[in-house]
Image 1 (tube, rainbow over the protein chains, first blue to last red):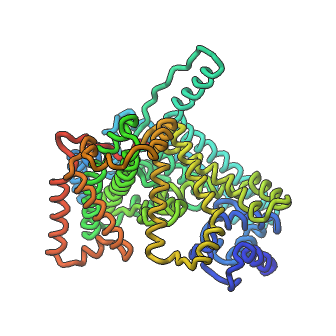
Image 2: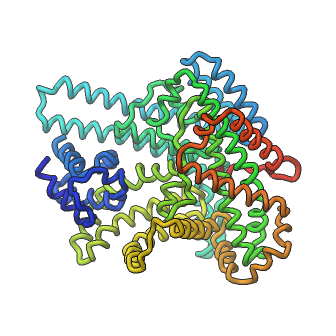
Image 3: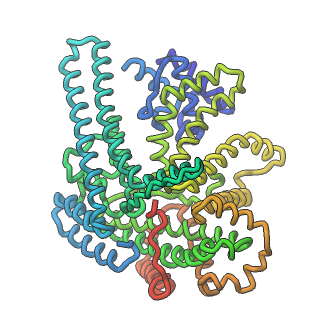
Length: 79
Length: 531
């Protein structure tokens, strides 16, 4: 999972350069990531890791932090 | 059976007594009988549609669930026998098989909706095309009547089937329970679009009822009645007069009509949902909120997150996200990012393509006509333009040290949102694209003085009615302000009995005295009932 984390943090930093804490939680709960950001992340995860995130996996909890997204990628690739 | 009818009040009282006296285990069946009785009042023929939908939903969800159970059992038993690759392949095969079952369910339910709602729209468009190419032949309209609430219960059913396919919920294997989820009567008039996972516990495994749920529910129903009867049905009279004769009522009248419609629609839809949620609460069933003070929204996008929430989240979960994560959109996105387009544009174009489809579908869901489709696409355009202009707004706010958190700015932004939405809603009010544009163009002609020379009295409302509407609007605003600190009803419940009694008696008396019912008034069905 750690191998995905840096790339995911970079994707989030590109979308929201104003974020100073790359380990921040509550990205969805606090309204930082909107649906546009989530779709961008999904397409980039497919490009970077070949991880296809289906609609049922798009939940606020799965996108609330870089770590949660990395766990999701890990789950999809190792399922 | 109108919510605002004596028949409904009688039905509710009798239903509550039976429900509360019945053993807890029998309550879902009582509720099912009550729901079908309520629904049959809209026309016994309507029952055929809801029964068919329930049968399809039951067969599809149980079939998918049985397959999922068999898969899990097989994989558990064969854990040490088959390889990881074989297990993965087995899962993929199972998923494909369940998807086929889901597709059958979706085709049957959405197909039913399409036939009853869009047949005449399709025929009309084909006839227009025939006319365009000079053909004399015409296809006669089918004239299919739309069963009450079909758009709402079909959407709930589709959500249920998809959730079972995704294994997000475990379906019931009791056909009567499936039928109850789909036909729960308070939701049949105008939603909200409930999710099985949210409502199943209260609906199918009822707990002993608490006294507070009856009180809180009754208060909410009363408040809904006040909104509908005092405000919505009164404003409706003037709105009907203005939009019914666009030649006569142009210019400033159009502006007045749109302001009144903004008030009417809010009081009508939120009032109806108050009655729905309050009624469900009296039966001990929690239904999801459908509004969070939508007229306080600072943008159209925010408004759509706060208005008809269950429809918005339905489209997000079952259309927007599945489409966004589909292969086609991913391919488009990948190609755009590799192209020479600016990065921001490359990221946003696929999302806008998906949003456009969602808004097209939202427009079509609201009505089978071009005015609703245009209404949906204009909503999309406004949201997209605002998103694209956001960096510009930010620069402007920074340059002029404008605080977007200050009350004057919030008030300005909320007013701007209401004005934009009122312009878009003209398409709904006037019913045709041509008439809407004609009426909109006329706003900039004529003098606003016509609003103050007594002409407004010719719209069917007296000065007294306008005063009632103004007071009603101020009350709605005051209650919305109070709601920001939590539920008003819960606070009322812990207030001294005398205060509570006075307020409720005052509200009840206001409905009796100022409600728009009786001779001279045309009691209106809820606006969202026609969708």
